[in-house]
Length: 295
Length: 305
Image (cartoon, each protein chain N blue to C red):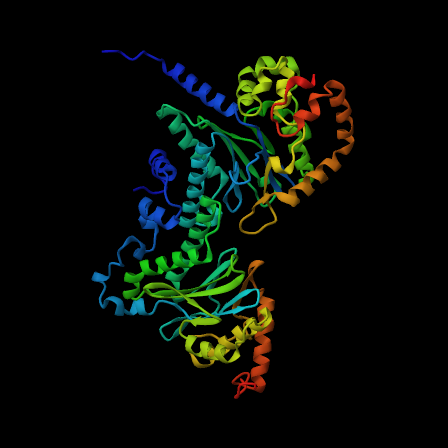
């Protein structure tokens, strides 16, 4: 077991030995202290902290909130609001919860923000490490399963109040479609079809998407439905932030298609948000779904 | 009971070094050089899956010659070093300098402590924000590191390749110009026939073992040397990659297929005036063997003469 500054021999032996191409597995044997607590097979030492998981400090850590994803023509769209909450306080207005995990996939997080960010960093390295070691990228299922293991490893900290639940979306190069995978605190993955949402406002966002979604939506339509759904989530969930017109803070939106991961620029995102807000000025509850199925 | 012979440490080191040098001399040369838009790496390699040039990190690449199983171990170790460092600190904290030092330590430890040294020579290159912050390091089997500003040739016939590369290299070349320089260097003929036969006797012997063993037994050293390096390399015989300065995040890119063919054609066109003379020269010198040896380096029957 050694750190980065150990003598060269010990380190070179560890780095140069034949092994499986998983970065997380390597760190677990080389220097587990670098991994988040759950990955070492232990939780946080909460024994000495009064209240354990109910401790006010743990409960009031910033939490990331609502994410929506929509499968569409050429791939998948993923978007997240910008709010992080600490108990009943807004801890951050411009937090980012949607991340590029590699060229053809993205992940977003709901739950304890700090743990979520570590997850993202580790998962990004995990995918890139595999790619460089093996000279090929993992299949989309392979990536989804890898993330499931990471979530499962976090189970004990999750029980102690440090839960993170990601959502994973990507373009499946083999099948030529966008796919969505969800998780619970014990792992997963569950493949979701058409659309999905996670986080505190997900009930409202999902209900909105249910009424707006249609198969093979164009990318702009899919983006618009995501922004509408986030607006609806913000409308009814205090932990989800709506478009902040005064500060020009708008949802983070990314598309993953056969061209790879692209994050919309702030200006593009602003345009969609303004469009939605303008519509809500006329109709505060948003677009109406037809009451009867077209015959 | 037998006593082991006493071997002086000096002799031991020399033997190991000779052993490693001969191993490396068996391999074809590679070049790494700067151009305005980044760093270009070129090596003759007929395999499109067993790479001699690879990505290490966002702005760092690895090129190697020698025994492939050994440099593969080093490549993976380098990726691990970079990924651990980047994860522990920040992506920007992974540098070619740090990696070169790590390789130097690892290689020198193996060189001094194990029976068999690594038969490899590696280059670690990092593309900076501007050309003057680019870094190229060459690390040899015994762990010695050298800083090679601008360009480096390494592997079997590194010296003669470096001579041409030095002539052709200039600051702020375009990618096409840089590729032209690299190809000219890699196909460089030995300076003079007698010099080739005397100075690199062992080197050409090993080289011939890989490429054209029949030519080693041929009558003239000159024809042997000519057969070692095909006069014109095609896209299928080359492994080419760049670190693209303008790219965000991961700058490493392989150039292959139609894109590479196009670039090679452009680079040939740009050097057309100089090249126009050479076919005449070549045909004047050795009409029958020149074109025959140009293709894939396979030994040709001497019946042509």
